[in-house]
Image 1 (cartoon, helix red, strand yellow):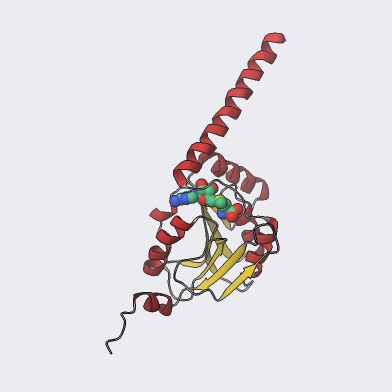
Image 2 (cartoon, rainbow, N blue to C red; image 1 turned 60 degrees about the vertical axis):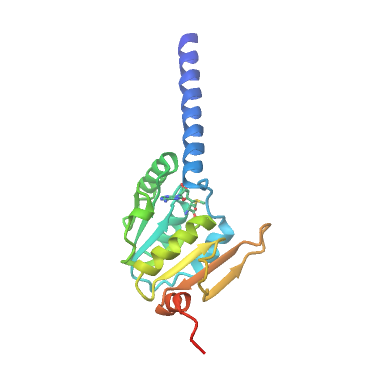
Length: 195
Ligand SMILES: C[S@@+](CC[C@H](N)C(=O)[O-])C[C@H]1O[C@@H](n2cnc3c(N)ncnc32)[C@H](O)[C@@H]1O
């Protein structure tokens, strides 16, 4: 019995250590930890998603899956796809989705920079400034006009939000909503007119 408890202790210890090392390693590699969207931010971001939405909604960096699950519940007529590369959050989100049994939700273990986003109706992200900078170019190239981009905390540099909601939380978090239009792109690349 004593030997069994010792073995169990070591297995649990190394499992927790592996989980910790994996989360830290992938957070450093991805440039952000799998910190979930707060409940307040979730409610505001969901309020920006119309119930009438059809098509595909991407959660870019879906973490533990909590936000994607709420989107899938709110938009049952949409297909929600969360992309995540960090294994521990990813497999947790798979498990969570198995329990929730949401037919319109799928998690994919893939770097979202390697996915074409042209079929998106809504893109949700909670990332970090460098990723938003890189995503801006991807959005301009791939998103079809009318696609809604909702970003927690970090703006799409150079784009004008159609709405910007500020939460009354500790960080005065902002939720940005954009509609991809040709003018997002035209304005950014417009050359000054010769006088
Ligand atoms: C702050 S969390 C947000 C989690 C979730 N979207 C939410 O709002 O609750 C950001 C997640 O993006 C993931 N991530 C960052 N860059 C990624 C990439 N290029 N491809 C896939 N996932 C990425 C990170 O591993 C992290 O779990």
